[in-house]
Length: 333
Ligand SMILES: NC(=O)C1=CN([C@@H]2O[C@H](COP(=O)(O)OP(=O)(O)OC[C@H]3O[C@@H](n4cnc5c(N)ncnc54)[C@H](OP(=O)(O)O)[C@@H]3O)[C@@H](O)[C@H]2O)C=CC1
Ligand SMILES: CC[C@](O)(C(C)=O)C(=O)O
Image (cartoon, rainbow, N blue to C red):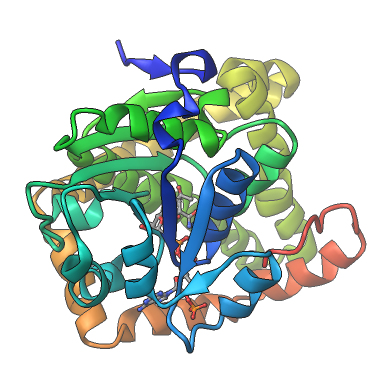
C-alpha cells in the first residue's frame, strides 16, 4: 500500500528560517511561489533579466533576482523552468553556488532520473510533484482545497530532507489532498506515461478522432464538438467525483451498453500501444528523443503544435464557448 501523507502528518517547521528560490515563474512557478508565500514561507524568484515573466512576478510582489543571485540568497532552490532548459540553468547558475547547506528541489524527476543533472553528494535533493496543472495548484489552494502530489527523496545529506519535502508539500496545499511517497524513477516514468497516453496525448487523440469521424461523415461540426469535447468534461466530472461506476449510474442504459461493448474495442487496440509507449519511456528512448529535439531547436514540437492550433475543432470551440460565458473561468496567465 502507498504511504500517503495528509496535513496532520506534515509540519511547516522544517522550512522555518529557510528561504526558497523559485527558478521560473510559469505554470508551476507562480503557483508554488504564491502558495508558499501565503503559507508563511520566505520566497524569492530567480529569472533572467530578459525574462517575459519578470514583470508578472514583480507585480505579484516578489523580489526577483538573476538565477545565480537567487541561488546564492536561498536555502532551497526549486527548479520550475521547462525541463529541457534546467540542465544548462543548473550548470551556469546553480552548481557554482552550491554548498552543503543547500537543497535542490524539483516538481518532476526527468533531469535527475535521466542524469541530465548530477548534483554533488553533499546537498539534499527532493521532489514535490503536484498531480495537476500549475494554475489549478494555485486556484484550488485559494479555495482552501489542494491538488495531490508525489514526494521523493533522491539524496538526504542533511538527515532531514524528508521533513523539508513534506513541509514544502504542505505549504503548497498538497497535503490537503494527499501526498504519496515515491521515487524519482516511479514519478518520472508514470508522469511521462500519463501525459502521453492518457491525460494529454490519449484524450486529445480520442477527441480529434471522434470529431473528425463525425464531421467527415457529414455531421455538423458544432454537433460533433458538443458530443466529443464539451460533454467529455461533464462525463469526466462525474468520474472525478463518483468514479467510473458513479458516472455509469447517471448515464442511460443504452449508453452503458455502448460504453461496455464498443469501448472494449478501443481498449483492445490501445492497451498494446500503451505498453509500447511505456517501454520507450522505461528504456530512456523518449527522453533521448526529447533531448535531441530540443538540441535541434524543437522542429517537430513546433510543427505539430501549429498543425493542431489550426484544427477545425479549435475554431468551432472558440465560437461555441462565446455563448457560454460561464465556461471561461479565470485567465490562464
Ligand atoms: N505545467 C505543469 O502544470 C506541471 C509541470 N511540472 C514540472 O514543473 C516544472 C516547470 O514546468 P512548467 O511550470 O510547465 O514550466 P513553464 O513552461 O510554465 O515555465 C516557464 C517559466 O520558466 C522560465 N524560463 C524559460 N526558459 C528559461 C531559462 N532558460 N532560464 C530561466 N528561466 C526560464 C520562463 O521565463 P519566460 O517568461 O521568460 O519565458 C517562465 O518564467 C517542470 O519540471 C515540469 O515538468 C510538474 C507538474 C505539472
Ligand atoms: C498532465 C501534464 C502534466 O504531467 C501535469 C499537469 O501534471 C505536466 O507535466 O504538465
